[in-house]
Image (cartoon, rainbow, N blue to C red; front, top):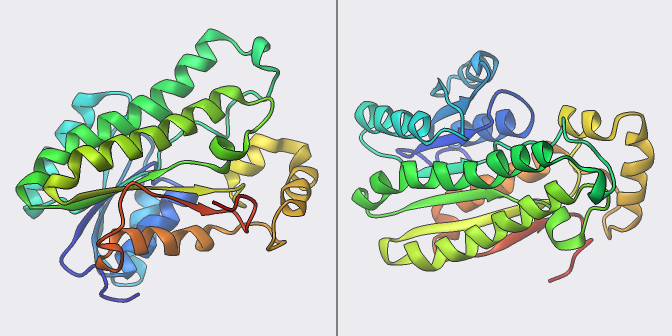
Length: 254
């Protein structure tokens, strides 16, 4: 994958840890200049990128605040002259309540939608003007198996990730004329800190149930997803848009 993305500039949201950190490192390893964005400090992510001699920087941004993202996009454009790749990874997941749908609070529902849905919209409208000027780009939205399979007792998360797939399809049709590709990745439960936090003491049981529905029966690792991000960011997928790539070990066969 080395040099597949040479000359490209990528922004990854939710990049302080977990999948976002892995995506940032893999994109940088493939040659991109990576801007690791998060409302939390991304110093660890940038250090990991630079450990391999790759190029990366950080930016503190809140995806629920459009001005925060626009300011970031404007700075990246000034500093590098372009934005080629956006990975919409920021999401509420680890801290969500797992409960029957009618026990969820309006505050929890609204917070989930603000980050997982509005955050994707905000990031896209921040970077697309620069992508248009650069005659194209690749937007990669992180969806979830929850959106297609249905995750019980987590309707706010399930609905938010279904909305991400809808955004992906609508934007793919709208932005194709500008050669901006928009795709989604829908993984099953990935072995990250966030997944462990979400399932808590039920983690082992939950992941065993998930594995039992897969054709490939092992728990998904971050590296299994990161390769798909590099693929969708690169010219290897230059005629792929509007798709939701299931990375779920064969749980859902589309």
